[in-house]
Length: 506
Length: 133
Image 1 (cartoon, rainbow over the protein chains, first blue to last red):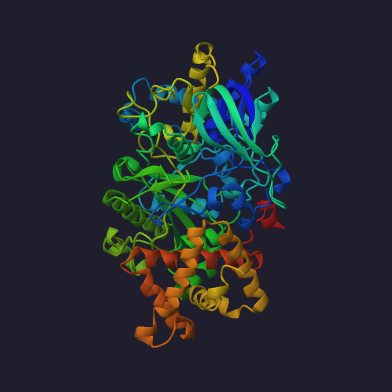
Image 2 (cartoon, rainbow over the protein chains, first blue to last red):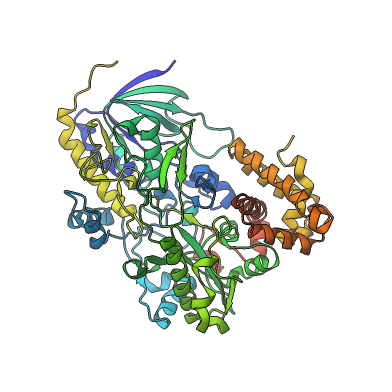
């Protein structure tokens, strides 16, 4: 037996998209409307962010961070907690490149509009550049290495307030410094009367109705119990905003049977496939302290890749280093001397790469590495190797080289040492955290799922506000663009709401 | 019965090959590693649980033709070579098996503060202050 609940706006997901919509629509509560956010994950207390890899990852990430693509050759990382992936990102805040938005060719979507909305959220989230004294060696060496290799590194604006440099961003900031939706938009929305229901999985959507399952807090688990009693609920809503992320939203709409009217649902999936490169220096460097991601090198337009500074925890680093045994252990033993670079390929939508659901409704992501992506990863690795050696590293661990270890003597032969042919799916550890597409924007239901305002074609009661809207890869870190698009979705909801009366319950 | 129990010997033999430091673990050290692996496996879909146990069984008999001994009976260096060969196997399922196994071993070992500290990782919520004190 399920309980019946009625509201005006139901928002599925509380990350960059859902949190933004919640805050933007919060004033409606003052007008007497009911706005409810459903988040599958828990709400954590500040003191529960302990920075432990083993204690935090299972709580913050879908599948504990181990969600695999259908053939098991890539790990997809996405948050499942109050605040969504904004709890586990590094807070890098970039405005969508004008050339990318122009290339999307979405009728009615202008880069200038996204830039304007992005600026609003940059201000809200205290986005700024870190001062030089806050930059650690791992980041400083990247900038110096870029300069030595003939590249120009750019500094990431980040959304922190009172960052003390714990370096634990990807495990949830233990100091409440990161200004994700769990710190900014959701609390503001709740203050105005928006309800946020955690541990609430939305099983399916039907016309103006959601089936929601609220789970009990597991014994000894982190996070608060849900404000709703455990059980199943039928929630009626005039409008439903799906903001569960690329995978979550696509899967929800697929298991709700919407592909029949939306043939492109689940298609157009891109994710910036990435892997970690590490290099060893002769001396210890500051790497496990300080903000982990201060600089990047954007070669998307020229060579199809982006390089970013990064710093991962021992297990994540070990997992992402290719190989095993003695050589692998030697690299891990050098942890205090390791410099890290994250290599991201700018992939493009291809027909094989899509989101489906299995018989139980669980998302299944099909992904094949195209030759262009593999070539981009190899080119990125060669550039990263030059940067590492430019920064003074003595050896580099390169997954797309055989053998993997490259020494300074190899610097003249990088083009032959690091090649696409050494990329072996299932052996080279690839992961992705920029999950995009599945409900892409466009002009019609034949070629897309949503319009430029997040309205699902032919389904007036259903809206989308997350990275599933991207019709192609963004080629930079996406969260600020998600917020800008979610702002547009919220605006359209406000505009359309008077015409969206509740149909009679069936 | 624990998920690893039927293949514990092979798991430990593989862990030592993947991570040489595991050769120094005593029984309580192994228990800590296996508890973490068990907990991680318990949260995975049943199919994934079966796959890893099946892979361990296949791994144990895989070297018999070539080395005339089971994987768990081989010297550590030989076990490492066997896993390197499987990492390069033509069949993606074998490559994935090694990848999954090494992921579990690294998780069981490096997520323990005592082991992460041993390689020089000292991240602290106190950040820069922790470095300077």
